[in-house]
Length: 364
Image (cartoon, rainbow, N blue to C red; front, side):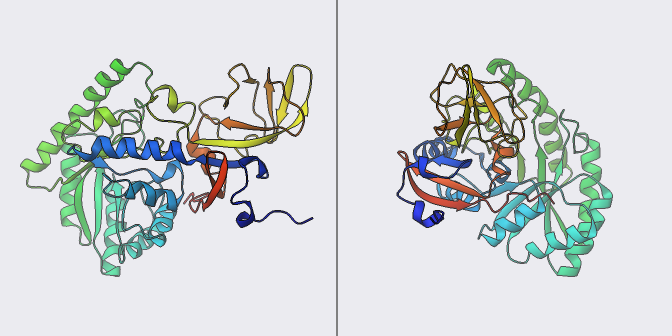
């Protein structure tokens, strides 16, 4: 008996899929895309959805088609290459692209698309400028400001102004604005405290933007924000775009702070072992991200995953026989999508499409 092909599974029930499989429920996805597109339709800030959350070019196109989006954000150069190959023409790499070889690849992308990058060092400016000049292009850059994550970025104020001056002096580069990401605050559990903390963290960004403008620098783009802060950062001056990503598919962790979005993503798994008080499903760390805790079993509120191994998920209090298909909502959608190559699309429990996850494994 032949294994089913992807095309032959279209029109079949979701449970016909070999497991584990990554599945997206289309009605929930459309709800999420429409909700955020509508929210930003009448606001000065617009969306720049983050590709790293799902790594699927087809879904990125759907996010653009939903409206209120100025382009796509991604985290890695290889992701930007996948997006440009898929027809996306406005991309921000919200990270530093470092090294001469990568600088040349970034410059090459700018021959057919506007692909910007975050910067925070003089070494990087020199690399990008040299590559851009050699390729005969101009690379737009955003100076990243560290507002509390203590990851990448320069301090606000004068260090930004100094870097801006060097960008202006570097052939092949163009200063397009600033990036400031409040990632340490986007999942703060108390909504009032989250709002106050974000507003406070962004005050130096506002001061720095005015400093740049007073010194005659362009600051057309100020980019940041996430799913947990879109309605905070998205209403703060001088932000012009919000890099929300998880809103499209959602996971059980983000759902706690952003309940207005629906869980569109789940992992279809099979019970492969059944015991008196627990069962075991055929998915583990190699098929599901768990950085934010254990997953949730859809439709079974009493079921409690006990732990997660490489290929196994033991689940307490889930009466189920061997062979039963179950649906699992992971705690972290971003790393879950990175583990799969195909995103199955279902409408009312029937498979209607499958989309490649082109950015899966794109780490460089």
